[in-house]
Image (cartoon, rainbow, N blue to C red):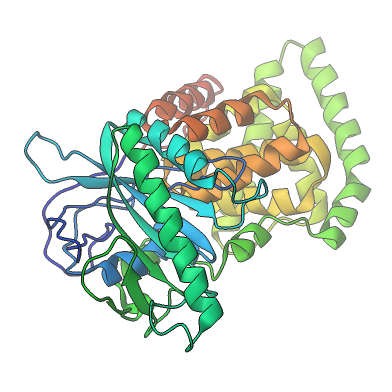
Length: 417
């Protein structure tokens, strides 16, 4: 779903194109998404990138990391995977971005080997043989007199050693680390420095004024201040959960009675159609700025429990209703406990996946699998992210949902992606 076409350096919709201090050629870049430090390790995609953008230095690459990831990385190693341009002969494009914690749960021992292994799988899937790396760590400082900031300089030396080890490990997988840089934080005025040798360093421009960041905002993709802030979007709302729980039993009893009547009279399609119509009405209501109240959320849970109805809703990710549907799924994820939470989270993860918001997709699917470890669709989508599967093959799920809705007599509108 990513694209790449010529565009001047204006408000383009793509990831940056570094002219690296280490002598890398100017590159065309299309955006990616990935996060190898989390349970779901690989996010990719980025349908928001419509064309390449020319960038002159590593500083521009560094400030483009937050909009590519959807949040500002901290104490992280971020790696951009370069894939050969198409048609053959075109310069490489960035096809994925992977983020690794600098302090992984398993400790730093063998860290370079683990990262190289992860990247080798990504590169194999993307037919890539080059990567760029950025280390973000507020505890580090650019090389200088040790007496100035001894601990920060020592920390920077650790990063240099990590990058050198990673370079060697990647070489065994026939992947080249084409450039690497360090920076304390991604903020205006921060100094960056090379980690693979080469000339000096530089100062970061204002990340908020980056063309990539502006493009992200224009496309409605917020850049969160941290990964924790992004995760908080899906955190349960205890008060809302309690209020919804008070209505669930009654909603399920009413749904069961309607189902039994429909079965008795051979009107099961009509039953499913009424449930789907209610979900679509709530989505339209959400699009106008309102959010469903607890009794309405309880009714929606009964609809999502029906596989036929739930199956049709995946199609919304490819329609003009996608944004409103995602707002409704977020509301339900925050309002529901247990397995019912998994259905809404999976719909949310699917929508984020197909539009290229990999980090958010991974988090939503983590929520789904935590609520229901045996949720089949969440498991399949999580496996797709883990293996680096492009969003394209998922379109058949949306197309199938669109056809299911049509069989119920409901037109969801044209598939726009």
